Length: 256
Length: 178
Image (cartoon, rainbow over the protein chains, first blue to last red):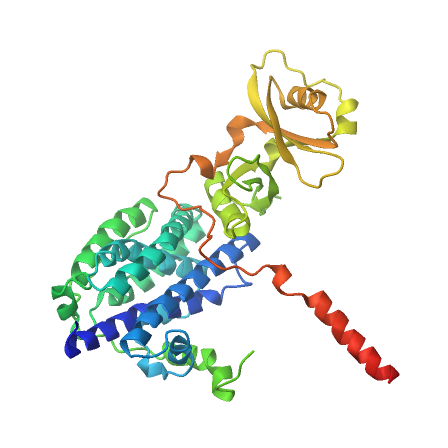
């Protein structure tokens, strides 16, 4: 059984995983109806929907840890939680600048998941391993899709390359926040519940850096330190959550 | 002026294991690999197909039986070597094009003539070189193009808008008459 401190650490860790998936999915869903071509509009909206689904899987585990109903509590977490209580990395909440930005961010995230999920499969906490197994099925396809786009935009025209480079320059440093530990995460690592994010970060870099370079992009220099205290959240999450919760704030228990 | 439209790829789907391929629809894409991805996103994600092919539409020769009957084989190139062609045929009664036996011919036109001659009830016919196919069925297991049976999809039949509107209108007109 988990002691109280480990349980609290687990709760904030899972909430972070959930919020990362959910907020990224929500941001990308804004492209629905605005994609570059119809086929990609459908494909990218599907990826966004998958991320929302992955978010729900993690929210259900949070529900279990809080002895709440896993069917209804995820809705509460999404629609009734204050913006400052969302635990996502700021980078997934950044508003999209252009298609290159959203595609590159989704690629960096998919690459992170492709390294992170296999490690979560080995978790000693069964619900994590089960959720990871479900999510991994879809992430294989996600990475395949976003890699194809990143490569073609990077190697494409002067303009597509310029936009990808700009997106990479904007996203590279903030994206490191995905690898910043949650409070007491070392307890989870010691108990083999979650992997060491420093190792995941190294593996992620080893995957994405050669790929970005082969896509004719220049990877910015960054310091290797990951253990910096959490970067202050920007205000993007406030705007996002205000819009997300607009209807449910007006009619909290509406059903349709 | 150069066109900004991406090339069209024809999509073929296999509805179940062991069943013949049939024409699914089409997608725009810059190349075959992304065409297959788009095809999967648009046609394959819902559990409707266990395998997908994409073929550049410019390589698909499409004719009705009538057109084939007065085909002049002026593009008959005797120097060309034989190759395999896939044949898809639409019978008079059906709306779908289904896979028919392959033919070997030196040109698409001759493949078409041979294909149609061997089919009983063919209203229209498509042929294309077997080499033009990019298929999920030859993908490695790494790339998961499998239909998502574990997911619950709602299709248009779950939203009986027409029936609902009919009821609403009936109610409204009843109230008017009352």
